[in-house]
Image (tube, rainbow, N blue to C red):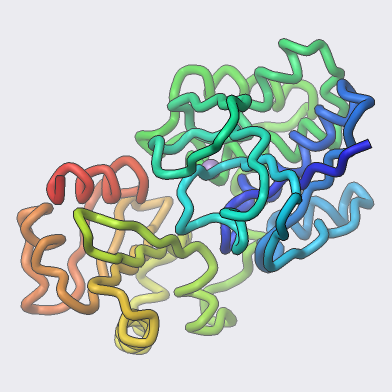
Length: 308
Ligand SMILES: [Mn+2]
């Protein structure tokens, strides 16, 4: 029996954790030949930890690298900069994702399913039905929580009709109101005043390459941006530090208010191309961007296009 690690991206968000757990669960139900082991590359997000505890599931095993000969199934990413260290020596056996197709390569043909839906767990919701595996309560809760965090309770422009119908289906199984369930998930992250500035900046950060520029973009979601703004200078100093110490050409922090629906852009480094891409200026510091909720669709995609 071969052991296959199922792993999301670095700095895992709820979708990466829940996709790793549920894909391993689904495959273990279908494939007796292999053992699928869900793992994580960083801290469990607060909402994932809360749900795991509620359903009596141990936190995922943490790994910091893979080795020659290890088999790996990637979920929620296909970008080398976001993947487990040592991936170049390991064997990628599958990819399940909802991002742009980036730069992961393999020698042999593999399973590769990428759909432009709101979350990887939304694709998994479909797969449970395709393979006729029961959506037990725990699995339904894990999937629903991650569709709702990745789509910001379906408000993000990344949310599709498929995501809406999956949310409806899972809410029915759980007999919950989706918006109430989603707010409970977001609130489990705690108040912004207790969160260390390192955590605000690193909780959900990703590396990108925009036309040869090494960039860092992080996003922090809040239900009260006004209450977080007194910490803007402190956060900007931390973003500057990350940009310098990480050797990034540019860094951009998005402080996203999911209720008011928009983000403060806090830049560091050579961000002229970012300002140009959005037709804004950082001369007076951070800029409020109404309507911007999605790093992927409204920020990264725009920068890829602009830098292209
Ligand atoms: Mn995702």
